[in-house]
Structure formats: C-alpha cells, structure tokens
Image (spheres, each protein chain N blue to C red):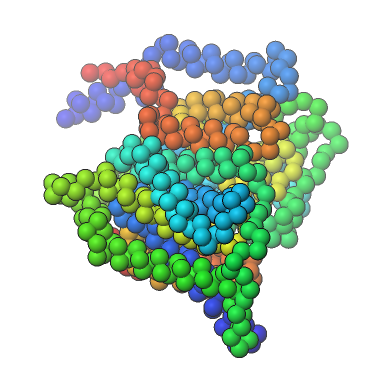
Length: 337
Length: 288
C-alpha cells in the first residue's frame, strides 16, 4: 500500500512529453511575439476576441464541464463584470486594475446568492433557472437609472493612452497583451484546478452525485464552489471588454448570444477538457468575425445559423468535441507503471 | 385601483394562462416521453404563428380556418425534428441533449430572421375581432376564443393520452421504454407521435394567437420561458399540472403587472418558479 502511494507521489504532475512541452512553450512565445511583426488592427482584434472567448468558454467549462451543471445564462456574470468595473471607474475614479476585482467580487456574491437556492436542484431545473436569470439581469439593467438604464454607460475617455485607466486609443497591441496575459493565467489556474483534489471532486459530483455523497463529498457545496469559480473567471472578461469597447449597454453585455457562444465554443472544442475552449474559440471566433465582414450587410444573423447548425452536428456526431481527434498520449501524462 | 380593474386583470391573466397551459402541455408531453426538454419550443411557436400569417397573406386564408393546416405543418415539423435530431441524442448525456435542442432553437430563429427579417407583422382584419363588454370588464373576442380553443385542445389532449389506445401506449413508453418494447410498442414510433402531438399543441396555440398577437421572429422566447416555468411548476411530465401552472403564471403575470410594475413581469414569474422549486422540487403534480 505504502509503496504504491510512494510511486503515485513520485509521478510528475505535469505532462512529461518533451514534444508537448516544447510545442506549448513555443506557442506562448509566438503569441507574445506576434504583434511585433506589425499585425494590422483587424488581426489584433481577432486575437483579442479569441483570447476573450476562450476564457469565457473556460468559465462555462468549469461549471458545465467539471461539475456537470448547465448554465444557460452565463452572460449575466459577463455583464456584471462589465458594469461593476465601468461604474466604479466612472463614479469614483477607481482604476480598472482594482475595479476588476470589484467585478469579480460582485459576480462571486451573485453566484453564491443564485447558487444556494438553485444548485440544490439539478439538471433541467438549473438550466431553466439560469436561462431566466440571464434574461432577468438584462431586464433589470435596462430599467435601472443609476447605471444609465437602456442607453448604458459611456466609459469616460482619457485624452491619451493610459495604463492606469487601461485605455489605449492609438494601438490595439497593449489590449492584446492584457488579454493574452489574462488568458494564460486563467488557463494555467484552471489546469491546476482540473488536477487538484477539488477538480477530481467536482468530476465525481458530475459523474455520480450519489456515489460522491457516499464518499462524504458535499455535493451542493461543491456545485456552489464551481459556480463561484466560474463567475470569478467570467467577470474580468466583462471588465476588460468594457475597457476595450468603452461603451456598454444592457443589450450588448447581457445579450443571450454571449451565453450561447460560450456554450457553443466549449461543446465544439470538447466539454470537460481544459484545452477544449481554446480549440473551440480558435475555430468559432474567426468564423464569426469573417461572416460579419462578408455577410454582415444582409441584416440577418448569419453567423447564428452556423452556430446552431454546428451545435446540432457536434451533438449528433462528436459529443466529446473536436478534442477527441487529438491523440490521447498528447493530452494525458504518461503512466509510470 | 377599483375592483373592476382587478377583475379585468384576473380575466386577462386567465385567458393568457390557458394559452401558456397548452404550450406547456406539449413541452411536458415530450419531456414525459423521453426526458428531453425541447428548448426550441418557443421557436416552434413562432413557426406556427408565421404559418398562420403566411397562409393569410399569400392565400387570404383567415387564421381561424388555417388552424388545421398549421397543426399538420407543426406535427410534420415535430416528426422531422425527431427523425433528424432527437433520435440520435436519445442515449446521449443530458448536457448534450440540452445543447442539441438549444442549437435547434438558435438555428430556427436565425433562419427565420434571415428569411423574414425581424419586422413586426400582424394579421389585418381577421374574422375574430372586437370585444365583449360585461359590466365594465372588457374581453377581447380573439383572446377569449383563443383561450377557449386552447382549453378545448388541452382537454382533447388529456382525453387522448388517458383514454385512447395510442395514448396509453405513449404512457407505457414514458414509464418504461424497454418494457413497452417487449409488449410490442415500438418506442421510436411513439417518440415520433409524441413530437407530432407536442408540436401540434403549439400549432393550435400559435394559430389562435396569430389573430391578435404581433408576429415576429423573437416572439417565442417569452412564451417558451413561461412554458418552461409552467412545466417545472406543474411537475415535469405531468400534463394536468400544466393547466394549473399555466393559470397561476397567467394570473401572476397580469396581477403583478397591474399591482407593481408591468416591465418586470418576467421577474414575478421567476420568483414563483424559485419558490416552488425550492419548497417543492418535484413541482405541484410531479412524478419525480
């Protein structure tokens, strides 16, 4: 018994495949170097959107993929993050670097408040409740005068680029680095989470709540923890997005499309897998941006047609997402025995 | 605030509630049968309203007479949905099932937006028009007949499910798919029938509402939300529960709108949902 434990403890916790490590390191260096090659602002925007959506999808992945609770109104936390940061910045002049944490805090509080009654339930009840929550937030913010009601908030512009106000008007490159760093930090932390004790417990809750309960795992508490983590990941993206476009209104940041796209990216990439959201975002965001360029004038939401179609096709043919095409030995660390 | 206004609100709420009840009954039937929530239910309602509208505007057929065609179209739509999507995800995880029907809803809604643009339309001068005055309470005729037809359709559905042979076969499949198959009830056929009937109910509701409601591509979202709430409130899979739940929701919506603030209707319904689901998670008449 002890010897097996010793073997298990001696196993490295990361993937020891040198090829994989070098590929990941190379990609990170490449991402940092990309703006130096003089990318035009459209490509910078494209990458910023990919990073943002990858993190948003990762947030959904934590609640849906790890703990198995489907939230159909996850855009609510995006909007809360955006509003909290912009509101504190405009009213009290708090720098966005600090008010991002306000956004996270408010989101976490809301996640607890929503989670305590709702996560005792499971399955369809939770999905329907979150759908209602997503729309309720939009309704409330459309009529809340303190935060500008339906016309939203226009973030006060600084005259020139400023790191303290997180506003850059001359180039998108600083935004690129800010989003890139948030993206890397988030993925690293979620990767740690996925192989921590908490991560395994969340998956136990997802796969068999009754068995988990019999192992003294408090199922509803762990669901709430997952929901709060998920909200905390989502909120900064709203905050950064608000600083990026500098105008937020309820129809934009509480749009149900946000809740749809995070779900779609995760399911497309591979639900329950840390790397799924990257694949999903890298495929879907360019489709969305390009279809907006070439088909944007037609008036209809053409990209949404593709989204719906892709979602159905993935559900029918590849329920585990595109990540299931990647060979197993790249994804998982080698077993020592 | 006089008694008349409150009575007026109650009557309006009742009439709306009966329509919610029928829409929810279709949803509940499908859920009871295969434990799949049709997240595209609102979009199917939208399709039925548009079917009524186009039959009126292209062929001059009044919504009242085009209802049988709408029902058939929607039933056909249900069979197609089952054949091309649902039958592949019957054994999938719940998460995949939710994502698939959610994808269907996005697909239908955006196709409709592309084809018909998001404009608001309405049927001009339908046969059912005007209002009835009882004392000082006004009842719109189209609303009144819509709710009566929905109530009738609801009891028709209830009779069909509890009394006819096919209905009993549906119930058997809902209770235990495999045992029913051993007894010679083909579950795949039953599922297709279930989808056809479930969406047929939506066809009735949509066809009647086309008489007086604005018709646009996002019309289904609110109705679907209320239908989801009604199904959860009445208990997943219980058809008679939908009737009570639909009426409760209609009353809460209209009285809450009258007494507090009409722009937060959704929140009152949401509050009711939370209360019921917390204190009685299986719903009012739930099996689970």
